[in-house]
Length: 200
Image 1 (cartoon, one colour):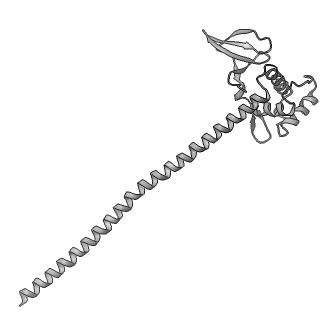
Image 2 (tube, rainbow, N blue to C red; image 1 turned 60 degrees about the horizontal axis):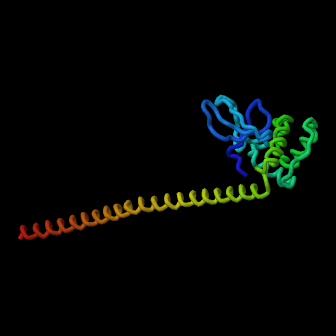
Image 3 (cartoon, rainbow, N blue to C red; image 1 turned 135 degrees about the vertical axis):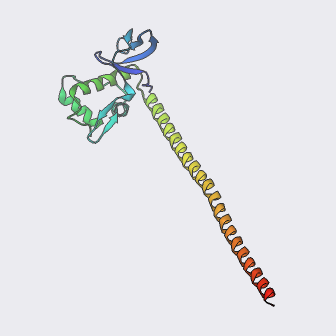
């Protein structure tokens, strides 16, 4: 399930796929009509993978909600009435019970389920693509955890290397102090012996 090139354009219904860059803008494909068109670089666009939905506590990525919808509806399109607010909210509660009902409007839900249908119809959301997406996500998480663990090991090793010379220095100072004490003792003994000799 690759959503890296799927965008929503403010003021235009549906979803679009980024095809290429053009002078002063981009060439996109309308996933509903399958027609290509150019858009200005000043157009307000949103990458689908960067969109989130408000929940009671924070936010949840749109991708996560789309995956939940696909699992609930067997990776098939949903038949819903866009003007039926209660039905829309009932569908949303099924897939994301903790969504913020006061911050997510009916227009947002219409877009969400319409976008889901478009992605299913274009075979962007399929059982196989979702499984692959989740596998890649798990691998990326595992690699990140390994990298973090390696950083900690490196930091600990570096700390040990730094602390060892310090201990060695401390030992050297202690040895120097002992040597100094011994020298003082020897000097005192020699001086005392010299004094006795002179007295005689």
